[in-house]
Amino acid sequence: MKFILPFAALVLSASSSLAQIALESVKSFADLEKVAAQLALQPYQAPTQQLDPFFEGLKYDGHRQIRFVRDKALFADQGDVFRVEFFHPGWMFKKPVVFYNIKEPQTVGVPFDGSHFDYGELKVPAGAKNPVGYAGFRVLAPDSLVKHPFEFMVFMGASYYRAVTTQLGYGISARGVAVNTIGGEPEEFPDFTHFWFQQSRVGDKSFKLLALLNGPSITGAYVAAVDAVNTLMASGKLTRSPITQSVAAISVGMLGDLALLDLEYTEDSSCDTDMNVVMTSAGHFVEVQGTAEGAPFTRAQMNDLLALAEKGIGELIVLQQEALKA
Image (cartoon, rainbow, N blue to C red):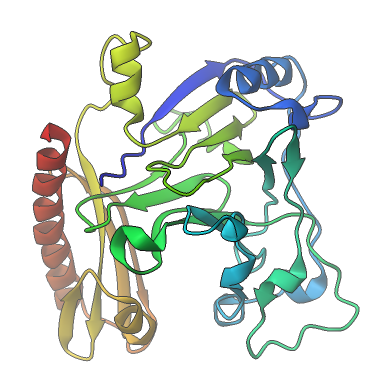
């Protein structure tokens, strides 16, 4: 099975307040287009929340201890289906994101629930105030797909997402849209503020969601689905593919003196250096993030890691192109 995550979009000028707009009425992309059009006529209001001081002050090591309880996932009660787990606000992820479940006969909200998290060794104060919303989510494929829980899409940080195939054949690491990335104007990265999940059922081969993208100068409605570009091209809604070149992402790291490619969880959690690299098929870098989580790394080690990442991404892009031809 291929997981392809392009987007079809309606992009409008101006932006947005959510006052008196019936977000619970959204059941389709057409409904979301209408919401985006209404928001485009109103003044922009940035999503914010005042976290409890305990969660506001969390650092990396504290925040990573908070784990979503797997059997509390959205749609977990539906059997072997696509499931959604959520991320807890804190550390650098403080913007609230609002979620809805498109059910019959009506769309319902998915409120924050602190009981759905395991806080590990954190001592959460008894009077700590719950956040007003989650910080993001991840989608897990049905266990029967690859015989174990498989996370293929993650959204985190209000404007950032990534996705991979079942064989890690290729990945996406991207923002929804970027504005003014060249020139003299300030850069702008509009946020995904709201998501609507289509209820998953046993036997589904794809997972569909709707998302609202919002910022000071752009309001848009996005829909993500497996093989979306091919579907839109076939229906005549797109006259040409928006994909101009391939992009792939991979992780590399140092475990002692050993450079590792495509780290597994156990390697990633214990490595001395963790680096994420995103490149295009033209060999250009989109993103490089490297952190010395243990011992500091040298320039020579960094060069080795980048070379290893470039080799791995080249292989992923070949697999990506082969998959798109299939």
